[in-house]
Image (cartoon, helix red, strand yellow):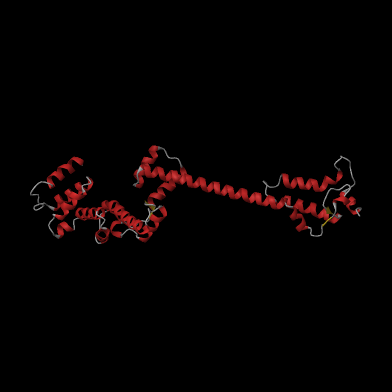
Amino acid sequence: VVSISRDMSAFLDSPGFSTVGFTPEQIACVCEVLQQGGSIDRLARFLWSLPNCDEISNNESVLKAKAVVAFHHGNFQELYNIIENHNFSISSHVKLQSLWLKAHYIEAEKIRGRPLGAVGKYRVRRKFPLPRTIWDGEETSYCFKEKSRAILRDWYTRNPYPSPREKKDLADGTGLSTTQVSNWFKNRRQRDRAAEAKDRENFEQKIMKYQDSSDSKDGIKATHPGLQPVSMNNMNCVHSPYRFSNDDISAVVKTEQDRALDLPPYHNNNNNTSFMMAAQDFHHMDKGGHMYMPLASALTDLP
């Protein structure tokens, strides 16, 4: 292509060059070669030299060449008019879609005075959807057709780590490049890992919140508002800041037993078991290891 483009450029730059006598097929060929070679200035001169007739003006290669020149010269309104007022074949869609989006991105950046990020570009695409003249009507997401995304999602459920050979097959089946397929799988795995980590964090926070509420002393006070604080100086054998009656002790033990039975398996362990055992047995021994009479009896004898 490069060699042909150089020969074509030399031919167009030769003295006395004229497009008179060129057939529409020859003109289309010259347009395609100059586009592929990136010779935008020569392409513009060639288009300017063409005779003004409908057969040439409505030729798809000529129209596409005019769109390319308009884009590179910053004449975006002419580009939009060409695209919106002529139907193009599917083979031209990718190129013209790219020009359409890039032109709108550039205009948006000039208005905002800064480069567009991913969100900014998404908003531009929503505001200026692709015309049906260069779009087959199938919904796209992040420039991937929904059909292609469905194929990738289906494969991901079976194997999130496709081999290089499988990526090549997926690229052929979706019309994407191998790099696009690789990036899609990489991004999908990262999103799934982030979602799993967030779910795990939320679950752990719920557990901690429940345990904190279960361990709080305010929980006992709220359940048994009749408990009254007493002076530690009056407590000879029972080291507790509250005065308990027989009914209070029975109610506390039963409440904690019921709560322990209602807890899920991963909660029904140390905290509640320890409390139940302490509520039943801690009155039998003081700091020195001496046995005392039952807690309820000891409490009723307090002044």
